[in-house]
Picture 1 (cartoon, rainbow, N blue to C red):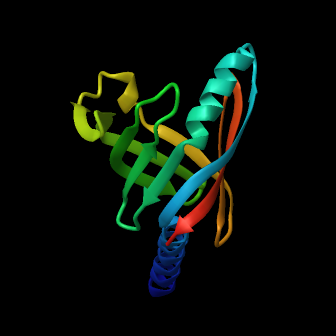
Picture 2 (picture 1 turned 60 degrees about the horizontal axis):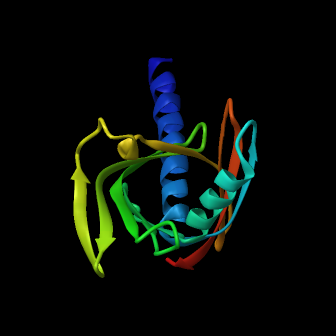
Length: 159
């Protein structure tokens, strides 16, 4: 009886790890944000439009070893920015937690480290996004809190 319980526990653990690894493998690659929808309470339309402009200038490079980079290309509001760090995937909730450990800004055409490992800065606050849907070429992420919901639609650029 004890051996049977142990076998079931090992099998269940493998299934959980496999689901997490499967999601990690499916998300690995380079993605571009192609749309952002915001359903927010008490947030000005101008702020939402600014956020959408930055979102549409964003690409993610996600590796299957738990590392990522998020690049925001130059826009009228941004000279260019890159966040690098680690990510964790909670297979049960299908939540990805992006934690930046380095932020670079583009200055005069070159990337410069402005802040590193200063977790007192809001820029380093972890970003939690839920995986709503994933296919071979499309990823839909969302974040819902008391202010509302933001949905990001990403298209795969490369694997």
